[in-house]
Amino acid sequence: MPRRLTQTPEKTHATMKNIAFESQVVTWLLHDGWQVFTPVLDNWHKTDILISDGQKYYRIQVKTITATKGKKNIEIENHWKDIHIDYVIYFAREGEWGYIAPAFSEEKRLLKHDEHKFFELKRKEFLTAFHTIA
Image (cartoon, rainbow, N blue to C red; front, top):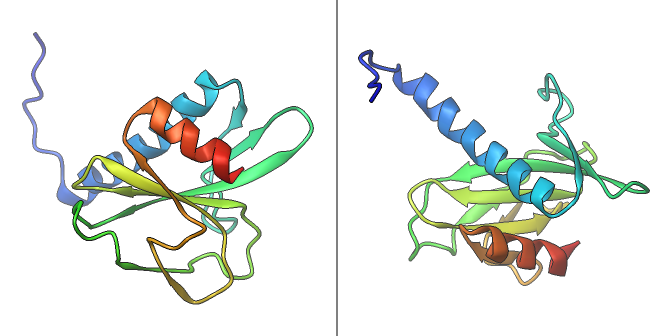
């Protein structure tokens, strides 16, 4: 069995974890039949994933947050002001849960807002939440 014998730098490891959440969303959406596109670079457009049903396109930003299951009432900041995105998907780094939120215009909002959909970190749970928000 192969074993990693080198130490991954802390910031690199954090980036790898964030990309893993993006890859998880891509996998779930592909499994659901969406066309999924990922940009080569998303710095200015703030689009991690672009999806299409063949007629419409939706821009998605994936964010990770530091929170435990008991801390869902944290505030989230609007990091995409003046940039058109459709949805933000939040994953709790330390938990097995997340939220799907439509892009909002306020500077800050509670993660547990009425428009946001909670999901457990399972494909069926995610897709159920996604279908009720999209």
